[in-house]
Image (cartoon, rainbow, N blue to C red):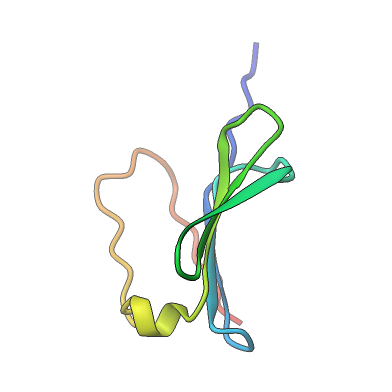
Length: 79
């Protein structure tokens, strides 16, 4: 039996300066702002579906991302 695991993605939107960390391929049904400009999205089962960070370049260093000891394949895509 094959179990499908969700793919985690980080996507930056320069036009809005927002970073979205997508944890699931399921749509979110509920959102909660946990801090100014940081919104957590939840799926229908109450699991975290994603995190949206507004004004990301002011809150994070987006020039470098370090992925450490991940057990899977790491893909990169640039626009």
